[in-house]
Image (cartoon, rainbow, N blue to C red; front, side, top):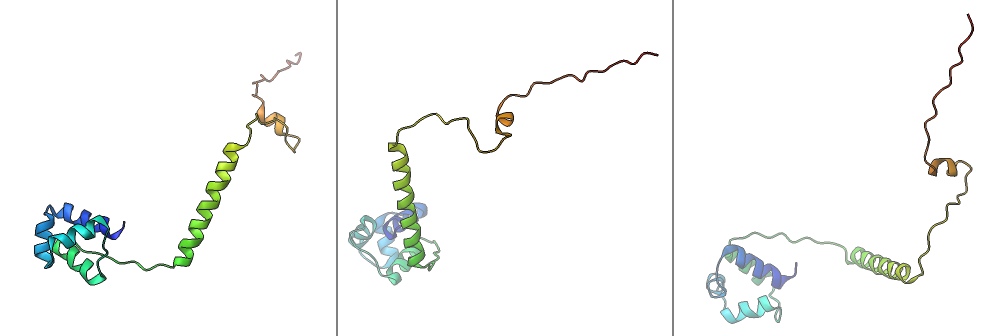
Length: 121
């Protein structure tokens, strides 16, 4: 969730107006409008003050941007592969397989009754 969305979300959850948030956080209503629209980014201290003014807590998580970049690249590559797969002509898969018992596994099994031979007495 981006900073602007987080501020708006916290304010809505607290059920207060932008003017009331500005009063509680000791800033102007215009600044709140700028922050919530994303036209302006608050400093970390201002962000904390805004969230605190909503009566909410916050948790900042640090992570490696290199790991995020690798995930993004893998996601983009997967999207490209799936798009290519959709663009290829489709055909029905053959029933041929590389091992001998495959046909027996894919065909329905019929129940055979055991035949008993009666022995003369």
